[in-house]
Image (cartoon, rainbow, N blue to C red; front, side):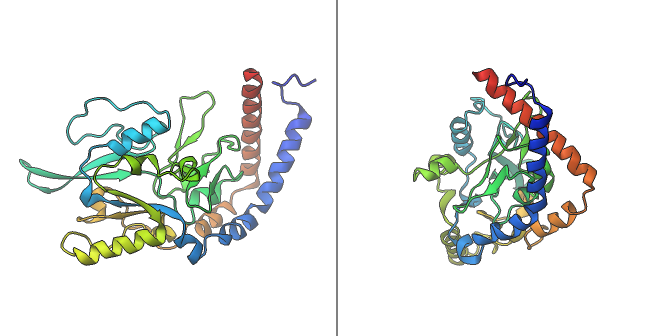
Amino acid sequence: MNNGTNITRRDFLKWSGSSALALSTLAIFDQTALAEFLGDDAAANQMGILVDTTKCIGCRQCQIACQAKNNLPALPEKIPAHETYPAQLSATAFTHVEFFQTGGTEDAPVFSSIKRQCMHCLEPACASVCPVAAIVKTPQGPVVYDADKCMGCRYCMAACPFNVPKFEWDSPNPRIRKCNMCADRLAEGKLPACVEACPTGTLKFGTRKELVAEAQARVASSPDQYVPYIYGLSEVGGTSVLYLANVPFEKLGLNASLPKTALPDLTWQVMEKIPAVAVGVGLLMGGVAWWRNRKGTSNEH
C-alpha cells in the first residue's frame, strides 16, 4: 500500500525504466533539439548581457537587486573596501562583484571591478551532461534549471567551464542554484533585475547580435580604452554574457585559455565512457530524489 510517502517497488521500477529510456536517447536529443535553435541566426537573436568593466564602479547595485529578486540573503550594509560579499558565486549568490588589483603600486594600488554570473553559453556543457534535462538552454537565451527534474548527480557542476552551478550542501532537499538571467522577467518584457539596477551603464541588455555590434563599436571608437577583444564571443563556442575590459581578462579572473569550440561534443565523449554501473547509481539517486520530492509534496498537503 502506498500512503503517498512510501515508494513502492512498482513505482521505482516504473521511474527507473522511463529514466533508462531517457538516458538511452539523450545523445540524440542533445545533437538534434539543441541544433534547432543554436544555429548562427538563432544564436544571434538570443538575448544576452554586455558587461563593460571600464564603466563599473563597484557599487554592487546589481548584486543587491539579484539578491532581492531571488529571495536570497541581503548583503551586509557595510562592506570593507575592495572586498566582496559573498566572496564568490554560491547557492545563495547568483551574481557578485569582484575586485582585482590591476595597476598602481603597493602603496597606491589601482583596483578594477567585474560582475560575475552564469555565462549562459550558446551550447552549454551543463545542459549537455544533465541526464534528466533539469538544465536546458531556452530559445530566448537563458540557461534555466528545473529542481523538480533534478536527481542530484551534479554533473552540471563538473562540466561547467566557468564553475557556475552551485549545490545546496546544507539543505535537506538540495537544489542546484545559479543565475537564470531572470527568465521570468524576460517573459514579461522586463529587463533582468541586475541590468535594471545598474546606475552606470556597465550592463547592457539586448540580442547577442546587437551586443556584439555595440562592443565592436566601442572598441573601434576608443581603442586606447579597451583591450581589442570581446570575451565570450567565441569562448567554448560563444556565450550570451559578453565582457569588455581595459586590462587583460585574466587579470579580472576570467579564464583566457578556454577552447573556442563548444564543449558538449567533448563532454559526450566522456559521458559515453561512463560504466553502466554509474548509470545504475544515477538511477538510484534519481529514485531517491523522486521519493524525496513526493514526500515533500505529500507533507505540504
